[in-house]
Image (cartoon, rainbow, N blue to C red; front, side, top):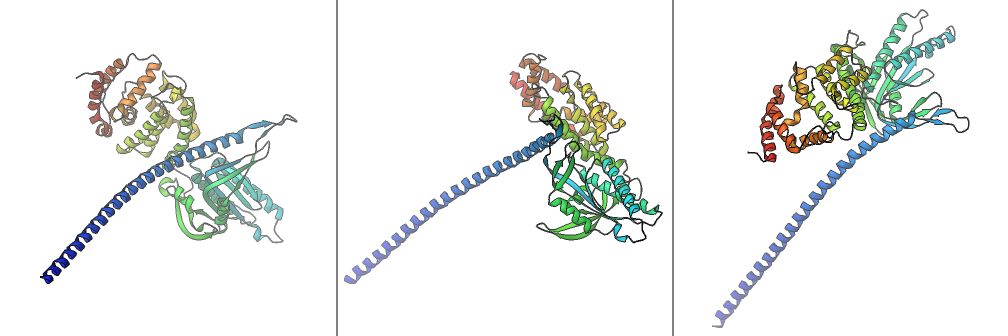
Length: 496
């Protein structure tokens, strides 16, 4: 009997122990779940904070780039300002330090003095070197570069300084090819067997330019990128043009280039180099690759368009009246973007894309002068600005025809006119149609050119119902949404 009681007691203890273990395990499981849940909440919170921080970082980066551009513009304006000397009343330029995010430095070593002998005419060689540098000065001026200095038998110039531009790597390489070509012709006609050779180094990067002088400004360049151009020249085989990988990436669509190994650069590691052989045959007038053809010029203008666009958008930003809520900078950017998209989709040529983008950039620029007849006024501005950017008369006339084609109601006569008309009214088939059309109403209302909001919406229904997109691309992208826009407007009016 006692043994049975002991066995029951042991079994009870075992059961109690098992219950305790289960209870402890349950507690541990609950604690683990609670911990996991808290950890998950913490992770979610951290992910959200990280996302918010990344968004804030992106905004700060955009603001930093914008502020850098503003500072650069102010610095450039200050460098052109004048101050009056309080003592003698003379007007002098302000010396200034400007930083450029993209400048291209050319450093040329002229080789010839090493061959001097007692029998040679030293003064004659010096005069010939001066003539050589004079020709280089003419080439630099032709490509709108800035001469920096000559040091003995070395010559330095730069592109993108002091006036920034997007084409400076191409401009500098073209100047280098012409310098090299001129030196070759000089050798051929030399009567006294004086042989000049050259080594050219070119590098693109950020540079600091210092303006010196009072009545006549001279420029001095500082920074590692200047030294890199010099290193490229000294690492170059005689009578070659040696460019850095930075420059190569910016000019490779224009020039034949051969890989030329690497050189070590302090703090930067190995620097990749390329030899420039000439213009790519397909975009050159001759086999030597010195003279560009029309295809080259079109590709060049497409890059140069970035500079023209910056100037015109700045003009619109500062000169458009405040009541232009629709015909503003954003609308111009939208049309420039859309003509390129539709243009490529419709299979137009590179030159036609250039004409479309330029016309879109100027199509509302006349608003800086007057609201009515702004298309005609935009053509006047185009004729004023475009010759400075190498547009020929034929291109300018076609651009003006495209601008005039945007007059309402649209009646395009050819494919390019259809593209710009569709781009100008692209918003009719977009999801943001209502807010965009409201800005147009506010613009017209402020000038007393429209009645009530209901009148405006009825006019919108009539216009959209009679409107059609002219290109297949625009019809595929936008036409399907137009009926929805009519329904949305009717809902605002309370119509069935």
